[in-house]
Amino acid sequence: MYWSSFSEFLAMGNHGVYVWGSVIVMAIAMIVEPLLLIRGQKSLVARLKRQLRAERQDNHADRSTPLQG
Amino acid sequence: MLKLIVAVVARDLHLAMRRRADIVSALFFFIIVVSLFPLGVGPEPALLRQLAPGVLWVAALLATMLSLPRLFADDYRDGTLEQLALAPQPLGLIVLGKVIAHWLVSGLPLALLAPVLGLQFDLSRDALWVLTGSLLLGTPALSGIGAIGAALTLGVRGGGVLLSLLVLPLYIPVLIFGAGAVDATVTGLGAQAHLSLLAALTLCGVFFAPWPTAAALRIALE
Amino acid sequence: MSNRVINWFKFASPQAFYPLAGKMIPWFWALAAVFGLAGLYLGFLVAPTDAQQGEGYRIIFLHVPASWLSMFIYLVMAFWAGLGLAFNFRLSAMMATALAPTGALFAFLSLWTGALWGKPMWGTWWVWDARLTSELILLFLYVGFIALQSAIDDARRADRAGAILALVGVVNVPIIYFSVKWWNTLHQGSSVSLTKSPSMATTMLWGMLLCALACWMYAIAVALMRVRTIILERERHTDWVRAELIGKE
Image 1 (cartoon, chains in turn brown, red, cyan):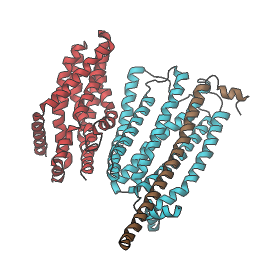
Image 2 (cartoon, one colour; image 1 turned 120 degrees about the vertical axis):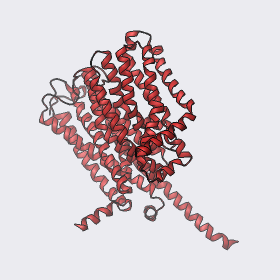
Image 3 (tube, helix red, strand yellow; image 1 turned 90 degrees about the horizontal axis):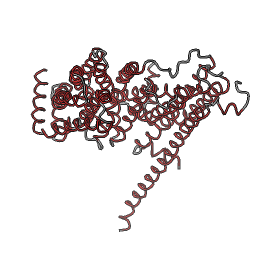
Image 4 (cartoon, one colour; image 1 turned 90 degrees about the vertical axis):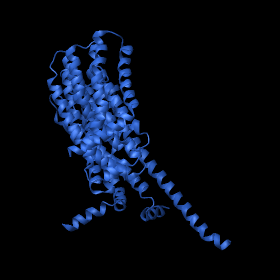
């Protein structure tokens, strides 16, 4: 271990702002990107399911109308 | 083969002459953009001399961009392009002819006009010569590379802005060597190396670019 | 031999690849986490300080992997796009589309960390250094690719137009890099190099390699996630997607 104390680790020899600024932005980017993808995938699946269900109902309706008429 | 290129060039020039207003507008755009810079940064001759190569070259890139969407759009709309693509002659050669014609109505007038504008920037006689020479050498590459972008964005919504987004990054080497040649003359270094590299870029640009352009046109026509 | 070829082509169809990618994603995430933790441990906790640059040099453990990946992803993207164009493989064209945003993200991160490195080292946020400038142009190339593909509604045309742009870009990248370098040496003389430190300790090198591997695994995982969404979207009218959706209900 190179550091003797945690505060020293945070200070990064007066370069803390720059080092942690890089780390935090990179971490945020690499967490947000997959989260957005998961959300996109989920909403796509939901949308496609809705469309599929709507299509089926249409088909049922088509078949049932002549009977009613 | 040469006959085909000449025929395409003649046809395109003929068509361009019917739209002289477009050519003149692009030239005036060039003049206006260049004239804005002294108004923006002040009339200090030393500063202007230093800025001149970059300003003139960047303005030339932008003026070339203006005329690029026209390169294939009219032929695409009236169906000529489809016939050209079906013709037995290689589409790449036809594209080469169109690129040459485009250069004759956009790059060449820019190069001839540039020394006049260079005078406004207090460039020396040598620098004016190199400026004209570098534009003559470099603008064919702009037409060639630009043709790829024009073909890719053919019939695509937001085509004009998209075209500049695609093409301007690819223009960077031409800008660097073109403006660099003038800059080297201004600062007293020789422009020789810059001009040779610029000529190499133009050769590559004009002779290789028509093939991806032809491929892009075929995709657009499908 | 022929058996293996058939297996390969089996997974080249979106239908077969979709579940396979779903199974692979957790593994790449796990690898990314392991490599990332190990690399950051070495880089931030074990590696000694750099005599010349102080502690600020630790940014390179993030900056260098991001730059490498941004360039590497462009090459991979052009490779898949070219393959899709040449052989009409739908999946490889989709892969190219899936890689572009991640590549652009890494290009941005490389610029961001480069700027934060430059402030303490050079005293300014931005220097027109050859590497930074090329990275910026690379970001422009990614943006052009993404903009072109999203402007074209027809998926097939978008794939193929994007492929031509990516291939033209790949030919141009070395020319751009060379010209920027030439321009840089003329205008500035030699500046402090961003990545070369006079004596790179072995721990530093290992830390950097591990971080780069972590980014690589991350890029694969994310690209697979995105390609799954693209597959689902484009194949939504096929029977297998319908079966997949019903199975999930």
